[in-house]
Image (cartoon, rainbow, N blue to C red):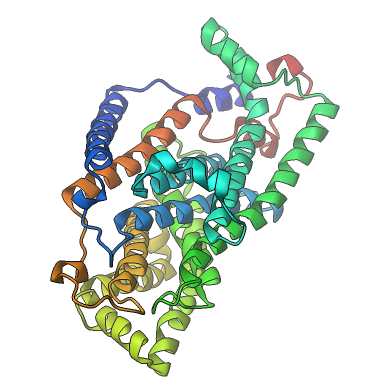
Length: 437
């Protein structure tokens, strides 16, 4: 078999086996449970959650910020590394793009879940004011989703044409791939437009990606609440998003490599490079954490003191220090050594990073809400504490399962690793056989 034909056979989408069907069934069960829980919330109102006048944002907004953070990986791997001419990242671009699309879709849906009256969402579009950071968030999320979808779709055009021919014995599947390829034949004119479009989208998505995380940070920073009243929040959120996104890519690439036997394409080199990148990103994020916590501690205003004492020594201290040490410091120490950047150790470390990233968002949102700038007098004691109810956890797990389901379906029908780009980089692309494309 020719190297080019072997490449297509290795990278073409495969049917789900029994494990794949069980995985899909599991995700659907979690999603159905979440839909029932949301029906209960919609019917009875947010009163059945743990949120009250103090903790008016709870686990849902923590989840929203987490999804927004994970979505930044699309611009990190696909745009920044692509524009930098980094060739080793090619096998990871499709994975990053899929993660970004799934995450930003669920970020938008999570906002609707958090609304007490989601039927009134139309008011945002009819009566929204540009002075409101919420409108900024809606605009950048919508724009980022559109560019992310295009950045996922455009590089797929040659691959769709390849798959049209490869699945010629399955007419329905071949027909769909043919339509999605937009009649790609690999001519010079098509290739020129194709390359220009991807480069333009890669440039456009960077400021939009930075914008979505900055605007999300501004939603917090434009208040007077201790813990949020910070000019550091924009870069702080962006740095944290890079860490969460890079960790997510490592986790997904390890799982896909294992399931689809992609060891010849996602090699130990890719894990080593991603491990080194993760060290750099964690160090940058640690720097912003120092700015975020130690400077207010040094100034020690009354409001900030109460908030920081709760984080450093109070009820949130175990979670806070676990996230900082286990989710940032330990990964840096482990990944400095080459053995820590091997596939399995790196996978475990990346899982810790992603889990730490989720709980970090919870720490950003909840403790601050429980220490308002203007406390309400004579409130019930229960208002001064918040922990998600079983219903909130069910809905939260449902959104995470939905993101994983979107990724699973996309990985089922799309080549996990770009076929055309990989063949081109390996010098085995059959340029003279446009019918193959």
